[in-house]
Amino acid sequence: MNSLAPFSVSDFDAGLIYAYPEVFLGLAACAILMLDLLLSDAQRRWTGVLAVAALLVTAIMVAVQSVPVKIVALGGLFELDRMALVLKIVTLLVVAVVFVYSTEYLQRRAILKGEYFVLGLFATLGAMVLISAASLITIYLGLELMSLCLYVMVAFDRESGVAAESAIKYFVLGSLASGTLLYGMSIVYGVTGSLELASIAAAVSGGLGDNIGLIFGIAFIIVGVGFKFGAVPFHMWIPDVYEGSPTCVTVFIGTASKIAAFALAMRLLPEALAGSQPDWSQMLVVLAVLSIAIGNVVAIAQSNIKRMLAYSTISHVGYVLLGILSGITQGYQAAMFYIISYVLVAGGAFGMVLLLARQGFEADNIVDFRGLNARSPWFAGMMAIMMFSLAGLPPFVGFWAKLGVIQAVLTVHYTWLAVVAVLFSVIGAYYYLRIVKLMYFDEPTDTAVLGGSVLMRTVLSANALLAFAMGVAPAALITVCQQALP
Image 1: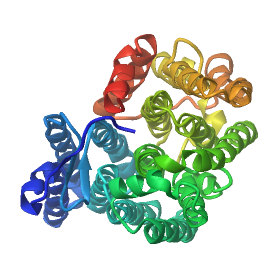
Image 2: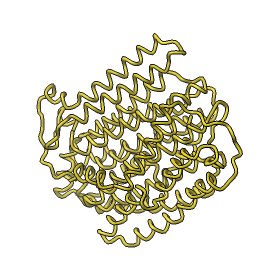
Image 3: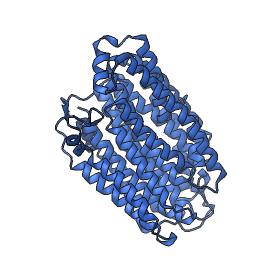
Image 4: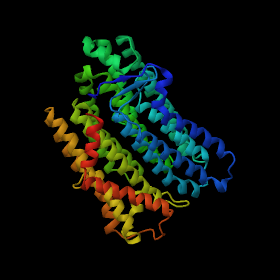
């Protein structure tokens, strides 16, 4: 996956310097947890401010790290390469934006608690550990740290029975998926005799590619990866969790956790199991086709926008898997471009739902966007940018993302997969354009003034404009992805 020659740091203490952003974020989360005890409910916003500041400082720490070659440190547990740097920076910035979107929403519902931000920071730390994992142990530790925080965040509104039900479903199914993934990794360890990804890759490429035990292990790993992505047929948790969670938690799950799932797939499949690429590619073909088809078709029938965006997520996961299953560098780069652009656009779409919500009103039905242009032409335009991007219309960023993965599968002669992707992309455009139609051609049923602080409105506008700029000039992000996965 990465042509850079690895550089190993044998001394544990010396290697710790490469993980100092993770160390800082963990210490910052602990400090914010302690400081929150000293704040009154009226001062709780400062917890959010400190959390955003910690994320931005951590992002700067990651950005200034120099990685001329891939670095393996901490006894083979931790690796730092260009892909890790890019994904960490995107994750940290996305979570910072989510926290800005969340603060007013939580305050209006009298659930603005410091625990939300602390759990979010620890979930982000888990994602960072996962992104830089060089061992099966680190992968599992990072994944579980993130997942356990997300389970609690889903049930954060303790007065909501729907949220509690969603959290239980997420926890039970997530535990089964984690156990399946762990079982698959244990089989891979038993076959290859190593926990380190580099050693596993060498063993698989050295003649174990057709080992029946290894194939069984890969099958269990695909189940775990499919669940974390939300790919069909492991998608059953996504619509209920997206709908039942507080919207600020939904946007967190729909953005940061998807980057972590992409890193999980890239570390386990192209990096550790490259020698068995024909086997796992065939498994991913099934997941990709089912996800694209079912996600786009079922989304048409949804009246709740959170459920619609949940099925939209499932369909977009299918397109990301197209890039990964191609088994070529071009495909990996296209998949990385897709997941980054999708997270940016999805964050803005959920941000619009948060903006329209107010005390006692969630704005989570599609009809709540009726006549938005009459109420606020500017934010109707911002939402239109998001919908056009998700639909994959040119020149918006979603078009370039889909074009990249379709080109990748054509390169490896999966012509029928490209046809399926294009066909269901056309079908899926309907439910995105339906929202644009409601905003511009229907009369408003709600005349209330849009809420949102000046900061939230500014960040949301910047989010949408950045998505538009990436569509008009996609070369910058394409270059970043090409450099991250040379």
